[in-house]
Image 1 (cartoon, rainbow, N blue to C red):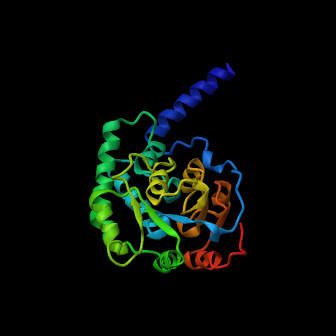
Image 2 (cartoon, rainbow, N blue to C red):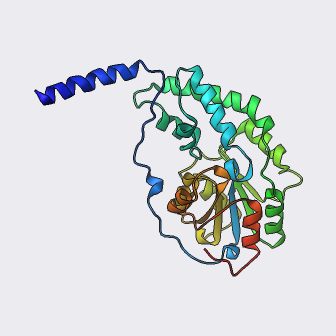
Image 3 (cartoon, rainbow, N blue to C red):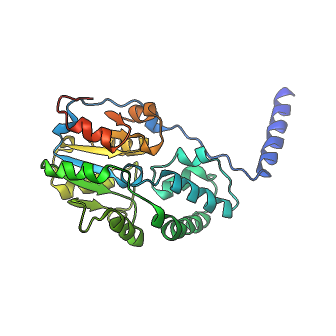
Amino acid sequence: MAVARRIRRRGWMNAANKTNQTVEPRRPAVRHLAVRSRAGGSLAEAKAYVFVVEGAVIDTVLPSVNCWLQTLAEFGFTFRTADVHRYHGLDPEGLLDRLLPADESPETKEFILAKYRTRWAAEVVPLLRPFPGVRELIGDLVSRGAKVALVTTARGEELAQYRALLGLDDALPVQVVVSGDDVARGMPHPDLLAGALDRLGIRQPGDALLVGASPFDAEAGHAARMRSVGMLSGLFARADLLDAGCQAVFLDAKSLQHALAAPEVVA
């Protein structure tokens, strides 16, 4: 009888929950919280540096979260800021898969994704700005003989806007850009990183250092067998970035530049 009462009560609670407009995101085991083994060594020894544009080069985190919140609300899904932010760094498809109910139709996801991308490109991207010190950091690395690549899930017109914002075609000395036009999957898959290493001519992944801003960036770096460092600009906790596999965590581009200028600094 007690079991039956619990079953009936659970059924009533489930029915009540469905009437609530706030969707509780599915919370699978978060793989990136597993502690990774981290290779040591000087951060300045890398032959190449691969920067994740979203969150580490351009300040996209809160603008992206707010864009998602607005778009999802139009389709009847209400989330807290923290619910969306915890998946920032995933590609858009992966983020939706984790936020929405498992039985949500593919068509609905496609409509939401299309609306998000339209709003993002038209309303948000024109307002974005690079983080202070990023251009100087990249310029310093190139002047020291290092190779530099940028990776981003942006594609098409969005990618063109990023290029113009960063001055990639004239001012910023970046050798390689790998984007959503080049690969089908973003983080935490290593596809973007593998493409960057290939184009840079880096045969040993350990010779390159990934600069990211989310645990999912570090997870992709681990899959690509790269060392990685994390930037607090992604608004994730230092402990989460370290647990995801980051060799070190930095406040901003200036602090990373200082560390790279000091060969004795190791993580």
